[in-house]
Image 1 (tube, helix red, strand yellow):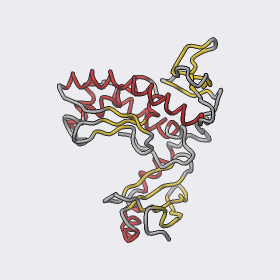
Image 2 (cartoon, helix red, strand yellow):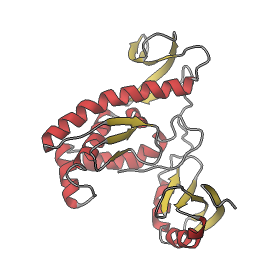
Image 3 (cartoon, rainbow, N blue to C red):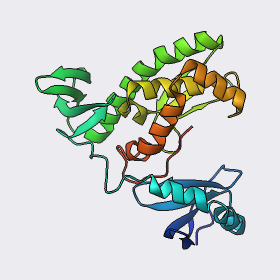
Length: 254
């Protein structure tokens, strides 16, 4: 048993629709117990501030049976996101796009190829193709997000700070109290209207740092397809969160 940051205990819990594997993990810096679902490995992860919180974490897990069953049903049956390797075809802004290696100093990005969209990935000698692909996709995500955030911020008459795109695996986006917005690069794999919804969601937090009815009213004014977008993310988000990952930490839908 590890009592620093790391896995403390493995268990199998029984749910009305069958058994489920659970990892109890000490997460450095966290102050409360939190639950995540791993859509690829098919197991739950309970994060807690210390190994001494294991009993509390078990109680918390016992109250989340319905949530876990819903999360498990959302797992794409047999669907695994393609590995980020040359010539793989992945969705980029909802269009099947082929990954292509280009000369190391060439400009990367999305282009129209002879047979359809291609994502050009500059690959200097010795560089990792997966990491370079994520870098190109992150830049593309930022290029989509920046104007959407600016438009929604103007509509709500709010100020936002820095916009960053990161390799996170638990949330699609976040907004700090200082007004800095952060997004998961994987959102660029979704349709453009989903990207717009996620931008609206985080901008709306500049008015309401919560998920109250007032908050959702702001979001729906900015993105009229909010309910449809949330349903789409519940249905497809776990699949997209697999992209570029060797190990999945979980999924989250704002």
